[in-house]
Image (cartoon, rainbow, N blue to C red; front, side):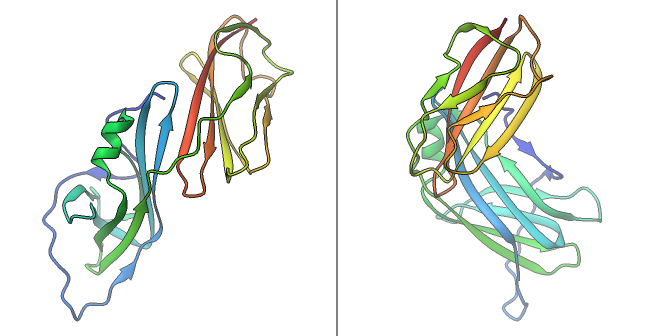
Length: 221
């Protein structure tokens, strides 16, 4: 799992002074708030993914931890506002991420481009499912075909879904999200080249949204 220090979608990161909304002001509500862990067992590294959407364009928003401290402050660089955000924390060892993001409810506070206060919240849990067991390909394999085969793993009964990411060299190949009950994914033609170092990640998604992944490195024939 290769990550930059911080990834934002449609946002720029900046500090801003938060003013508590007046009590007589109506609050708008954010939608689809989510905070989940993504842990790669193979490298023992993790990130936290934070998302929210808004029906009204946002000028700014901040994330506060359960103790009230501000973790991230975001604002747009234009007058059009943003319809939401997708934020990824710095990648770190699992223990460091769990320490930085305590379990509990995190608040989101912001303002729309017309000055209305908007709020939301997201809860993060540290509970994760055990790493998936990939049965093919095996780590370090050097004889994997370029097509006509399937990534396979042992099904996890408590999973609400699976994630399969297939990459080759510096090229992103494919990312697939699968419903529960799956234990395989067929590699389509035209994705892999022969004689090239590649890797596949298989992730199992827990009921709370946390994902536990394993990475398998292999080389195509």
